[in-house]
Length: 485
Image (cartoon, rainbow, N blue to C red):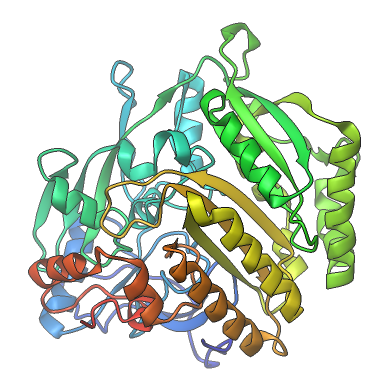
Protein backbone atom coordinates (compact mmCIF):
# COMPACT_ATOMS: atom_id res chain seq x y z
CA UNK A 1 0.00 0.00 0.00
CA UNK A 2 1.04 3.59 -0.39
CA UNK A 3 1.25 6.49 1.98
CA UNK A 4 -0.21 9.89 1.15
CA UNK A 5 2.01 11.66 -1.37
CA UNK A 6 2.82 15.36 -1.17
CA UNK A 7 3.12 17.29 -4.41
CA UNK A 8 6.26 19.25 -5.21
CA UNK A 9 5.81 22.97 -4.60
CA UNK A 10 6.16 23.84 -8.29
CA UNK A 11 3.54 21.38 -9.57
CA UNK A 12 0.66 22.87 -11.56
CA UNK A 13 -2.59 21.11 -10.66
CA UNK A 14 -4.42 22.15 -13.83
CA UNK A 15 -5.49 19.25 -16.04
CA UNK A 16 -4.81 20.10 -19.68
CA UNK A 17 -5.78 18.46 -22.94
CA UNK A 18 -3.28 16.21 -24.67
CA UNK A 19 -2.59 17.49 -28.17
CA UNK A 20 -2.60 15.16 -31.18
CA UNK A 21 0.94 16.14 -32.12
CA UNK A 22 2.46 15.62 -28.66
CA UNK A 23 4.41 12.75 -27.20
CA UNK A 24 3.03 10.99 -24.14
CA UNK A 25 5.22 13.02 -21.78
CA UNK A 26 3.93 16.40 -23.00
CA UNK A 27 0.86 18.32 -21.96
CA UNK A 28 0.15 16.31 -18.80
CA UNK A 29 0.03 17.81 -15.32
CA UNK A 30 0.79 16.24 -11.95
CA UNK A 31 -2.02 15.31 -9.58
CA UNK A 32 -2.12 13.59 -6.20
CA UNK A 33 -4.84 10.99 -6.68
CA UNK A 34 -6.52 8.54 -4.36
CA UNK A 35 -9.04 5.75 -4.52
CA UNK A 36 -12.51 6.63 -3.29
CA UNK A 37 -11.75 5.04 0.04
CA UNK A 38 -8.99 7.68 0.41
CA UNK A 39 -6.66 5.09 1.89
CA UNK A 40 -4.63 4.42 -1.27
CA UNK A 41 -2.73 7.19 -3.07
CA UNK A 42 -0.54 7.75 -6.10
CA UNK A 43 1.15 10.71 -7.74
CA UNK A 44 0.19 10.82 -11.41
CA UNK A 45 0.49 12.75 -14.64
CA UNK A 46 -3.06 13.34 -15.85
CA UNK A 47 -4.28 14.07 -19.37
CA UNK A 48 -7.87 14.84 -20.21
CA UNK A 49 -8.89 14.28 -23.85
CA UNK A 50 -11.93 16.22 -25.00
CA UNK A 51 -12.89 14.02 -27.96
CA UNK A 52 -12.59 10.41 -29.05
CA UNK A 53 -10.20 11.53 -31.78
CA UNK A 54 -7.94 13.20 -29.24
CA UNK A 55 -8.19 10.12 -27.05
CA UNK A 56 -7.04 8.01 -29.99
CA UNK A 57 -4.01 10.24 -30.37
CA UNK A 58 -3.16 9.74 -26.70
CA UNK A 59 -3.31 5.97 -27.09
CA UNK A 60 -1.32 5.93 -30.32
CA UNK A 61 1.38 8.10 -28.72
CA UNK A 62 1.57 5.80 -25.71
CA UNK A 63 1.87 2.75 -27.95
CA UNK A 64 4.57 4.42 -30.01
CA UNK A 65 6.53 5.62 -26.98
CA UNK A 66 6.25 2.35 -25.06
CA UNK A 67 4.30 4.11 -22.30
CA UNK A 68 1.56 2.71 -20.09
CA UNK A 69 -1.83 4.27 -19.40
CA UNK A 70 -4.42 3.88 -16.67
CA UNK A 71 -8.05 4.85 -17.26
CA UNK A 72 -9.95 6.94 -14.73
CA UNK A 73 -13.45 8.34 -14.67
CA UNK A 74 -14.86 9.76 -11.45
CA UNK A 75 -12.34 7.81 -9.36
CA UNK A 76 -15.08 6.00 -7.43
CA UNK A 77 -13.28 2.67 -7.12
CA UNK A 78 -12.42 2.31 -3.45
CA UNK A 79 -8.87 1.02 -3.93
CA UNK A 80 -6.32 1.29 -6.74
CA UNK A 81 -8.27 0.23 -9.84
CA UNK A 82 -8.18 3.80 -11.17
CA UNK A 83 -4.66 4.61 -9.94
CA UNK A 84 -1.63 4.34 -12.22
CA UNK A 85 1.11 1.77 -12.25
CA UNK A 86 3.55 4.19 -13.92
CA UNK A 87 2.11 7.60 -13.11
CA UNK A 88 0.08 8.18 -16.29
CA UNK A 89 -3.70 8.66 -16.07
CA UNK A 90 -6.25 9.25 -18.81
CA UNK A 91 -9.14 11.21 -17.29
CA UNK A 92 -12.26 10.45 -19.36
CA UNK A 93 -14.70 12.78 -17.62
CA UNK A 94 -14.73 15.32 -20.46
CA UNK A 95 -16.32 12.75 -22.79
CA UNK A 96 -19.97 13.28 -21.80
CA UNK A 97 -22.02 13.10 -24.98
CA UNK A 98 -25.43 11.47 -24.72
CA UNK A 99 -27.93 10.51 -27.42
CA UNK A 100 -31.66 10.94 -27.18
CA UNK A 101 -33.51 8.09 -25.51
CA UNK A 102 -35.20 5.75 -27.97
CA UNK A 103 -38.79 5.80 -26.65
CA UNK A 104 -39.67 2.47 -28.22
CA UNK A 105 -36.63 0.36 -27.35
CA UNK A 106 -35.71 2.26 -24.19
CA UNK A 107 -32.07 2.43 -25.29
CA UNK A 108 -29.66 5.32 -24.97
CA UNK A 109 -26.05 5.72 -26.11
CA UNK A 110 -23.64 7.58 -23.87
CA UNK A 111 -19.94 8.47 -23.78
CA UNK A 112 -17.79 7.01 -20.97
CA UNK A 113 -17.65 10.22 -18.94
CA UNK A 114 -21.43 10.38 -18.46
CA UNK A 115 -22.24 9.71 -14.82
CA UNK A 116 -25.04 7.59 -13.39
CA UNK A 117 -26.56 10.84 -12.15
CA UNK A 118 -26.43 12.34 -15.66
CA UNK A 119 -28.13 9.20 -16.91
CA UNK A 120 -31.03 8.99 -14.49
CA UNK A 121 -31.68 12.70 -14.65
CA UNK A 122 -31.96 12.40 -18.44
CA UNK A 123 -34.40 9.48 -18.47
CA UNK A 124 -36.58 9.80 -15.34
CA UNK A 125 -38.82 12.58 -16.74
CA UNK A 126 -39.54 10.30 -19.72
CA UNK A 127 -40.61 7.42 -17.49
CA UNK A 128 -37.41 5.35 -17.38
CA UNK A 129 -34.77 4.38 -14.83
CA UNK A 130 -31.32 2.80 -15.31
CA UNK A 131 -31.67 -0.99 -14.98
CA UNK A 132 -28.69 -1.25 -12.62
CA UNK A 133 -27.19 1.43 -10.40
CA UNK A 134 -24.44 1.13 -7.76
CA UNK A 135 -24.76 2.59 -4.28
CA UNK A 136 -23.58 6.02 -5.44
CA UNK A 137 -24.70 8.05 -8.46
CA UNK A 138 -21.29 9.64 -9.03
CA UNK A 139 -19.43 6.93 -11.04
CA UNK A 140 -19.09 7.29 -14.79
CA UNK A 141 -20.75 4.82 -17.12
CA UNK A 142 -17.31 3.90 -18.45
CA UNK A 143 -16.21 3.02 -14.95
CA UNK A 144 -19.40 1.03 -14.34
CA UNK A 145 -18.75 -1.00 -17.49
CA UNK A 146 -15.11 -1.59 -16.52
CA UNK A 147 -16.19 -2.93 -13.11
CA UNK A 148 -19.48 -4.50 -14.29
CA UNK A 149 -21.21 -2.89 -11.34
CA UNK A 150 -24.19 -4.43 -9.62
CA UNK A 151 -27.01 -2.90 -7.62
CA UNK A 152 -29.52 -3.93 -5.00
CA UNK A 153 -31.30 -5.96 -7.71
CA UNK A 154 -28.39 -8.12 -8.91
CA UNK A 155 -30.16 -11.29 -7.78
CA UNK A 156 -33.01 -10.46 -10.21
CA UNK A 157 -31.49 -8.69 -13.23
CA UNK A 158 -27.74 -9.32 -13.04
CA UNK A 159 -24.97 -6.71 -13.34
CA UNK A 160 -24.95 -3.73 -15.69
CA UNK A 161 -23.25 -5.77 -18.41
CA UNK A 162 -26.44 -7.74 -18.96
CA UNK A 163 -28.18 -4.51 -20.03
CA UNK A 164 -25.62 -3.33 -22.57
CA UNK A 165 -26.53 -3.75 -26.24
CA UNK A 166 -23.12 -2.81 -27.61
CA UNK A 167 -20.11 -0.58 -27.05
CA UNK A 168 -17.30 0.91 -29.10
CA UNK A 169 -13.81 -0.16 -28.01
CA UNK A 170 -10.64 1.83 -28.68
CA UNK A 171 -7.77 -0.63 -28.85
CA UNK A 172 -4.10 -0.16 -27.99
CA UNK A 173 -3.15 0.21 -31.68
CA UNK A 174 -5.54 3.16 -32.07
CA UNK A 175 -8.20 1.23 -33.98
CA UNK A 176 -11.86 1.29 -32.96
CA UNK A 177 -14.22 -1.67 -32.92
CA UNK A 178 -17.93 -2.03 -32.20
CA UNK A 179 -18.54 -4.95 -29.85
CA UNK A 180 -22.07 -6.39 -29.71
CA UNK A 181 -23.37 -8.38 -26.76
CA UNK A 182 -24.55 -11.20 -29.01
CA UNK A 183 -22.37 -11.25 -32.13
CA UNK A 184 -19.14 -10.69 -30.16
CA UNK A 185 -20.11 -12.46 -26.95
CA UNK A 186 -16.65 -13.71 -25.94
CA UNK A 187 -14.93 -10.34 -26.33
CA UNK A 188 -17.94 -8.57 -24.84
CA UNK A 189 -17.72 -10.68 -21.68
CA UNK A 190 -13.99 -10.10 -21.39
CA UNK A 191 -14.11 -6.30 -21.68
CA UNK A 192 -17.14 -5.79 -19.40
CA UNK A 193 -15.73 -6.27 -15.92
CA UNK A 194 -12.19 -6.25 -17.29
CA UNK A 195 -11.16 -3.21 -15.20
CA UNK A 196 -10.26 -1.12 -18.25
CA UNK A 197 -7.29 -3.35 -19.09
CA UNK A 198 -8.20 -4.46 -22.63
CA UNK A 199 -9.09 -1.12 -24.20
CA UNK A 200 -11.14 2.05 -23.77
CA UNK A 201 -14.91 1.93 -24.08
CA UNK A 202 -15.71 5.14 -25.98
CA UNK A 203 -19.51 4.76 -26.16
CA UNK A 204 -22.09 2.44 -24.60
CA UNK A 205 -25.65 1.63 -25.68
CA UNK A 206 -27.75 0.73 -22.62
CA UNK A 207 -31.29 -0.55 -22.19
CA UNK A 208 -33.29 1.39 -19.60
CA UNK A 209 -36.17 0.11 -17.47
CA UNK A 210 -39.65 1.54 -17.94
CA UNK A 211 -41.17 2.88 -14.70
CA UNK A 212 -44.67 4.18 -14.09
CA UNK A 213 -43.49 6.70 -11.54
CA UNK A 214 -40.37 7.71 -9.65
CA UNK A 215 -41.26 6.05 -6.36
CA UNK A 216 -40.65 2.74 -4.61
CA UNK A 217 -42.67 0.97 -1.94
CA UNK A 218 -40.10 0.05 0.73
CA UNK A 219 -40.55 -2.43 3.58
CA UNK A 220 -38.12 -2.56 6.51
CA UNK A 221 -37.79 -5.40 9.01
CA UNK A 222 -35.33 -6.03 11.86
CA UNK A 223 -33.75 -9.51 12.03
CA UNK A 224 -32.01 -10.88 15.11
CA UNK A 225 -29.15 -12.75 13.36
CA UNK A 226 -27.25 -13.04 10.10
CA UNK A 227 -29.01 -16.34 9.40
CA UNK A 228 -32.38 -14.63 9.83
CA UNK A 229 -31.28 -11.79 7.54
CA UNK A 230 -30.26 -14.27 4.84
CA UNK A 231 -33.51 -16.21 5.18
CA UNK A 232 -35.56 -13.04 4.97
CA UNK A 233 -33.73 -11.85 1.86
CA UNK A 234 -34.22 -15.26 0.29
CA UNK A 235 -37.95 -15.29 1.10
CA UNK A 236 -38.48 -11.86 -0.50
CA UNK A 237 -36.60 -12.52 -3.75
CA UNK A 238 -39.65 -13.40 -5.83
CA UNK A 239 -41.69 -10.37 -4.75
CA UNK A 240 -39.08 -7.59 -4.51
CA UNK A 241 -37.38 -5.48 -7.17
CA UNK A 242 -34.55 -4.52 -4.81
CA UNK A 243 -33.16 -6.08 -1.63
CA UNK A 244 -30.45 -4.98 0.76
CA UNK A 245 -29.67 -5.46 4.44
CA UNK A 246 -27.62 -3.48 6.94
CA UNK A 247 -25.67 -5.66 9.41
CA UNK A 248 -24.53 -4.74 12.92
CA UNK A 249 -20.97 -6.12 12.84
CA UNK A 250 -20.50 -5.38 16.54
CA UNK A 251 -23.25 -7.86 17.43
CA UNK A 252 -22.24 -11.50 18.01
CA UNK A 253 -25.26 -12.83 16.12
CA UNK A 254 -24.90 -10.42 13.18
CA UNK A 255 -28.34 -8.85 13.60
CA UNK A 256 -29.52 -6.48 10.91
CA UNK A 257 -32.31 -4.66 9.11
CA UNK A 258 -33.63 -5.81 5.72
CA UNK A 259 -35.00 -3.31 3.20
CA UNK A 260 -37.12 -4.66 0.34
CA UNK A 261 -38.41 -2.35 -2.39
CA UNK A 262 -40.80 -2.67 -5.30
CA UNK A 263 -41.61 -0.25 -8.09
CA UNK A 264 -44.81 1.72 -7.61
CA UNK A 265 -46.95 0.85 -10.63
CA UNK A 266 -49.59 3.53 -10.17
CA UNK A 267 -48.75 6.30 -12.62
CA UNK A 268 -51.02 8.64 -10.67
CA UNK A 269 -48.44 8.61 -7.88
CA UNK A 270 -46.31 10.86 -10.09
CA UNK A 271 -42.80 11.82 -8.94
CA UNK A 272 -41.28 11.68 -12.45
CA UNK A 273 -40.15 15.28 -12.10
CA UNK A 274 -36.52 15.63 -11.06
CA UNK A 275 -37.30 17.76 -8.01
CA UNK A 276 -39.11 14.80 -6.48
CA UNK A 277 -35.86 12.80 -6.58
CA UNK A 278 -33.94 15.33 -4.51
CA UNK A 279 -33.79 14.94 -0.76
CA UNK A 280 -35.15 17.81 1.35
CA UNK A 281 -32.78 20.33 2.86
CA UNK A 282 -33.38 18.80 6.28
CA UNK A 283 -32.55 15.15 6.93
CA UNK A 284 -35.28 13.31 8.87
CA UNK A 285 -37.16 16.63 8.80
CA UNK A 286 -34.89 18.01 11.54
CA UNK A 287 -31.18 18.28 10.75
CA UNK A 288 -30.10 20.79 8.07
CA UNK A 289 -27.92 18.92 5.60
CA UNK A 290 -25.33 21.68 5.78
CA UNK A 291 -24.73 20.77 9.46
CA UNK A 292 -24.48 17.00 8.98
CA UNK A 293 -20.68 17.08 8.72
CA UNK A 294 -20.47 18.48 12.26
CA UNK A 295 -22.69 15.70 13.57
CA UNK A 296 -20.65 13.09 11.71
CA UNK A 297 -17.47 14.32 13.37
CA UNK A 298 -19.06 13.80 16.80
CA UNK A 299 -19.96 10.19 15.89
CA UNK A 300 -16.46 9.05 14.98
CA UNK A 301 -14.85 6.35 17.13
CA UNK A 302 -15.42 2.64 17.73
CA UNK A 303 -17.42 3.03 20.95
CA UNK A 304 -19.72 5.62 19.40
CA UNK A 305 -20.15 3.49 16.29
CA UNK A 306 -21.04 0.48 18.43
CA UNK A 307 -23.72 2.60 20.10
CA UNK A 308 -25.01 3.96 16.78
CA UNK A 309 -25.29 0.46 15.33
CA UNK A 310 -27.17 -0.73 18.40
CA UNK A 311 -29.49 2.28 18.28
CA UNK A 312 -30.22 1.70 14.60
CA UNK A 313 -31.21 -1.92 15.23
CA UNK A 314 -33.32 -1.18 18.31
CA UNK A 315 -35.15 1.61 16.54
CA UNK A 316 -36.06 -0.73 13.67
CA UNK A 317 -37.02 -3.52 16.06
CA UNK A 318 -39.33 -1.24 18.07
CA UNK A 319 -41.14 -0.15 14.92
CA UNK A 320 -41.65 -3.71 13.76
CA UNK A 321 -42.04 -4.47 10.07
CA UNK A 322 -43.14 -1.24 8.44
CA UNK A 323 -43.52 0.23 4.95
CA UNK A 324 -43.09 3.64 3.37
CA UNK A 325 -42.64 5.24 -0.03
CA UNK A 326 -39.32 6.61 -1.15
CA UNK A 327 -37.93 8.20 -4.32
CA UNK A 328 -35.57 6.08 -6.40
CA UNK A 329 -32.60 8.38 -5.78
CA UNK A 330 -33.15 8.47 -2.02
CA UNK A 331 -33.36 4.67 -1.82
CA UNK A 332 -30.29 4.00 -3.96
CA UNK A 333 -28.04 6.98 -3.23
CA UNK A 334 -28.80 8.23 0.26
CA UNK A 335 -25.18 8.83 1.25
CA UNK A 336 -24.61 10.99 -1.85
CA UNK A 337 -26.95 13.52 -0.28
CA UNK A 338 -25.16 13.58 3.07
CA UNK A 339 -22.37 16.18 2.88
CA UNK A 340 -19.00 15.00 4.11
CA UNK A 341 -20.16 11.62 5.41
CA UNK A 342 -16.78 10.01 4.72
CA UNK A 343 -15.22 12.34 7.31
CA UNK A 344 -16.34 9.81 9.89
CA UNK A 345 -13.37 7.64 8.86
CA UNK A 346 -10.80 10.38 9.40
CA UNK A 347 -7.68 11.26 7.44
CA UNK A 348 -6.62 7.65 6.89
CA UNK A 349 -9.73 6.83 4.91
CA UNK A 350 -11.26 3.37 4.69
CA UNK A 351 -10.83 -0.12 3.31
CA UNK A 352 -13.91 -1.92 2.08
CA UNK A 353 -13.67 -5.69 2.04
CA UNK A 354 -16.49 -7.20 -0.03
CA UNK A 355 -16.74 -10.96 -0.39
CA UNK A 356 -19.11 -13.04 -2.52
CA UNK A 357 -19.75 -16.56 -1.24
CA UNK A 358 -21.87 -19.39 -2.74
CA UNK A 359 -25.26 -19.94 -1.13
CA UNK A 360 -24.57 -23.16 0.78
CA UNK A 361 -21.59 -21.62 2.60
CA UNK A 362 -22.66 -17.96 2.77
CA UNK A 363 -23.99 -17.60 6.32
CA UNK A 364 -21.35 -19.81 7.90
CA UNK A 365 -18.51 -18.11 6.03
CA UNK A 366 -19.70 -14.56 6.56
CA UNK A 367 -20.38 -15.27 10.23
CA UNK A 368 -16.77 -16.46 10.49
CA UNK A 369 -15.56 -13.22 8.90
CA UNK A 370 -17.52 -11.11 11.36
CA UNK A 371 -16.25 -13.21 14.29
CA UNK A 372 -12.66 -12.78 13.14
CA UNK A 373 -13.14 -9.02 12.91
CA UNK A 374 -14.47 -8.87 16.46
CA UNK A 375 -11.66 -11.11 17.73
CA UNK A 376 -9.05 -8.85 16.11
CA UNK A 377 -10.60 -5.73 17.60
CA UNK A 378 -11.05 -4.27 14.11
CA UNK A 379 -14.81 -4.20 13.71
CA UNK A 380 -16.21 -2.65 10.51
CA UNK A 381 -18.33 0.41 11.16
CA UNK A 382 -20.73 -0.27 8.30
CA UNK A 383 -21.70 -3.68 6.92
CA UNK A 384 -24.08 -4.52 4.07
CA UNK A 385 -25.53 -7.86 2.95
CA UNK A 386 -26.93 -8.57 -0.54
CA UNK A 387 -28.19 -11.50 -2.61
CA UNK A 388 -26.54 -12.28 -5.98
CA UNK A 389 -26.81 -14.58 -8.95
CA UNK A 390 -23.99 -15.84 -11.24
CA UNK A 391 -23.26 -14.43 -14.68
CA UNK A 392 -21.07 -15.29 -17.68
CA UNK A 393 -18.57 -12.42 -17.59
CA UNK A 394 -14.97 -13.55 -17.64
CA UNK A 395 -13.81 -11.81 -14.46
CA UNK A 396 -17.18 -11.79 -12.74
CA UNK A 397 -17.32 -11.32 -9.00
CA UNK A 398 -20.89 -12.59 -8.77
CA UNK A 399 -21.89 -16.03 -7.47
CA UNK A 400 -25.18 -17.70 -6.62
CA UNK A 401 -25.12 -16.57 -3.03
CA UNK A 402 -24.58 -13.54 -0.80
CA UNK A 403 -22.08 -10.71 -0.53
CA UNK A 404 -20.90 -9.05 2.66
CA UNK A 405 -19.35 -5.58 2.45
CA UNK A 406 -17.30 -4.43 5.44
CA UNK A 407 -16.12 -0.83 5.85
CA UNK A 408 -13.02 -0.44 8.03
CA UNK A 409 -11.57 2.80 9.31
CA UNK A 410 -7.85 3.05 8.42
CA UNK A 411 -5.37 4.84 10.67
CA UNK A 412 -1.60 5.02 10.73
CA UNK A 413 -1.70 2.79 13.83
CA UNK A 414 -3.96 0.01 12.49
CA UNK A 415 -3.13 -0.04 8.78
CA UNK A 416 -0.73 -2.99 8.83
CA UNK A 417 -2.98 -4.95 11.18
CA UNK A 418 -5.93 -4.27 8.86
CA UNK A 419 -3.96 -5.55 5.88
CA UNK A 420 -3.20 -8.78 7.72
CA UNK A 421 -6.84 -9.11 8.75
CA UNK A 422 -8.06 -8.63 5.17
CA UNK A 423 -5.63 -11.32 3.97
CA UNK A 424 -7.04 -13.68 6.61
CA UNK A 425 -10.57 -12.83 5.51
CA UNK A 426 -9.60 -13.51 1.88
CA UNK A 427 -8.27 -16.95 2.79
CA UNK A 428 -11.58 -17.89 4.44
CA UNK A 429 -13.55 -16.62 1.43
CA UNK A 430 -11.41 -18.45 -1.13
CA UNK A 431 -11.65 -21.69 0.86
CA UNK A 432 -15.45 -21.38 0.61
CA UNK A 433 -15.31 -20.93 -3.18
CA UNK A 434 -15.88 -17.18 -2.98
CA UNK A 435 -14.70 -14.13 -4.89
CA UNK A 436 -14.09 -10.42 -4.38
CA UNK A 437 -14.75 -7.20 -6.29
CA UNK A 438 -12.17 -5.12 -8.20
CA UNK A 439 -14.19 -1.93 -7.67
CA UNK A 440 -13.81 -2.26 -3.90
CA UNK A 441 -10.54 -4.13 -3.35
CA UNK A 442 -7.47 -2.41 -1.94
CA UNK A 443 -5.79 -5.25 -0.08
CA UNK A 444 -5.89 -8.62 -1.89
CA UNK A 445 -2.76 -10.50 -2.94
CA UNK A 446 -1.99 -12.30 -6.25
CA UNK A 447 -2.64 -15.76 -4.79
CA UNK A 448 -6.17 -14.67 -3.87
CA UNK A 449 -6.83 -13.51 -7.43
CA UNK A 450 -5.60 -16.76 -8.98
CA UNK A 451 -7.68 -18.88 -6.61
CA UNK A 452 -10.87 -16.87 -7.04
CA UNK A 453 -11.00 -16.31 -10.81
CA UNK A 454 -11.05 -19.34 -13.11
CA UNK A 455 -11.44 -17.02 -16.13
CA UNK A 456 -8.12 -15.28 -15.50
CA UNK A 457 -6.11 -17.46 -17.93
CA UNK A 458 -8.49 -16.67 -20.79
CA UNK A 459 -8.42 -12.98 -19.85
CA UNK A 460 -4.65 -13.02 -20.16
CA UNK A 461 -5.01 -14.48 -23.65
CA UNK A 462 -7.29 -11.62 -24.64
CA UNK A 463 -4.75 -9.18 -23.21
CA UNK A 464 -1.99 -10.71 -25.33
CA UNK A 465 -4.15 -10.53 -28.45
CA UNK A 466 -5.53 -7.00 -28.00
CA UNK A 467 -2.73 -5.21 -26.15
CA UNK A 468 0.54 -7.12 -26.61
CA UNK A 469 2.57 -4.03 -25.71
CA UNK A 470 0.82 -3.67 -22.36
CA UNK A 471 -0.37 -0.09 -22.91
CA UNK A 472 -3.34 -0.40 -20.54
CA UNK A 473 -2.55 -1.19 -16.92
CA UNK A 474 -3.23 0.05 -13.39
CA UNK A 475 -1.92 -0.15 -9.86
CA UNK A 476 -4.52 -2.84 -9.19
CA UNK A 477 -3.32 -4.92 -12.16
CA UNK A 478 0.26 -4.64 -10.98
CA UNK A 479 -0.56 -5.40 -7.34
CA UNK A 480 -2.58 -8.49 -8.20
CA UNK A 481 -0.24 -9.69 -10.94
CA UNK A 482 -3.13 -9.90 -13.41
CA UNK A 483 -0.73 -10.17 -16.35
CA UNK A 484 1.76 -12.50 -14.68
CA UNK A 485 1.10 -16.11 -15.64
